[in-house]
Length: 89
Image (tube, rainbow, N blue to C red; front, top):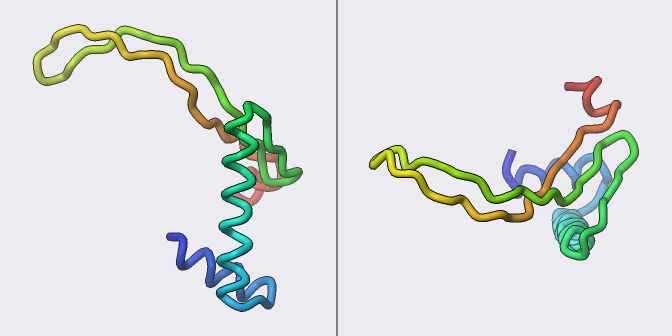
């Protein structure tokens, strides 16, 4: 499912127009991004939890040249599915 299909599905399920569903989705993405950028968690009971995890620097290998290189540390978004979502999948 892509963004346009999600907007259509949201509009049908909630009885909204596609314009309103698109605005709601963009507001959700913006609020989620802002929360995660501050380092906070976003917990949606029954759906799951978004959080930021620090991935440490590590050694890697270039598959083409087989030469070792250092992969720098970075922050990544982690999603842990909630119980209701896990049961449906």
